[in-house]
Length: 494
Image 1 (spheres, helix red, strand yellow):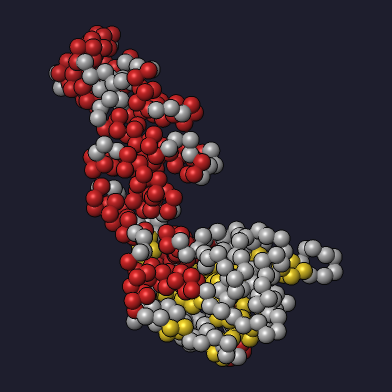
Image 2: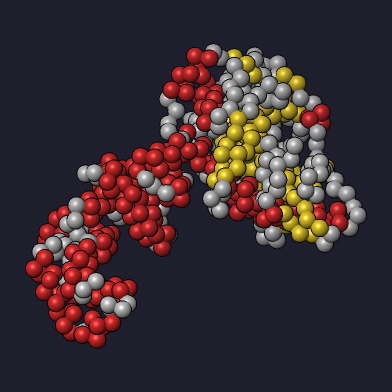
């Protein structure tokens, strides 16, 4: 039974509304020191063909040997995707011929993958969420890289990437908009980074996606899909889906039909173009690799890996909301990147009273710190203000030593000059004034200087905000705002 479609997810065509159906095959490079079937290095950026073993180069008589760490990483990823782990899986040969595939086949998994069905909960910008089903995760070796810009009339081949372990994570066709697809890849990348199973660096090719797109009238069966190969940025994934959906709608509305084919996305033109007719499984002539026994491990092996899994984004988000009272939005921002969550937790660990000031700390991390980092185009690792320094600033606010306004001045000093926040407050006389006598004098002076406004405030109580601002200004932001408010209400008869 088809779920109801949100009107915002439908595309208006010339003859009515259409629904996009999207499935993704995400290729995630496994974080490991050695390749899937050889001991060659996986380090990025080496000289061409400097990380190539005889196995990777497909020299005669060379036999593959499975890298156990890659198996562990695949199982850990499966557990992080709430997926079924298959204790027995089979490696197959996927036969096709391309210059950067020296064996003439890719060792992959076909009918018996290492990981079965799972799911990913994806939060959307409007506060809703969807669950995207995972069809499977299988291990395979990457191909090399063809370089077409090295010579005028020849292509060069770099086999450094050949044999690097990939996890192909295949989703079900559960996404209905480019926004959902972008949010899914973002969430998937976050999970992989938390697990430490892939660095998710799309610029280096560590994560890339094949995007399957079809269109249909709402409620009708799935249409014919086209696959857009090797899209290497989340923004491009969204653009490719939008263009491809409208291309297909235009063809169908003109009375044509969609050919199942493989396409490429041209980011310069913002459009997809035909690459080749879509292969079916039988075109690859899959068969079990005769050089590799079936991969088998025990449930104890899986359980040992499960025990050591880190706290994942959804669990961390729930804890931040439940234990610290954060809003779902703030919690989502903090857990969106592993580095952000780690920084916030380091701030929490430095607080005198994390339960009391955890929400305040979140506001400071998100608004002040992240805001300033974004403004200066810095990443969190480059922050001039450390987690312990920010915790000290939040502590000073929480205990009433400084006001929020003074705290912003203090943050600026620490950002530009460094130093211990407590020592700076003492040395520069930045402590909040809580002496009621001193505050009362400032209140009296402001009220006496503005008799017309004092007369009006009884009819317009909201004008008290103006008086509060004037007193805070007169005190250089050091007066306790609550004390100022209380005294003004008494003096003005409110």
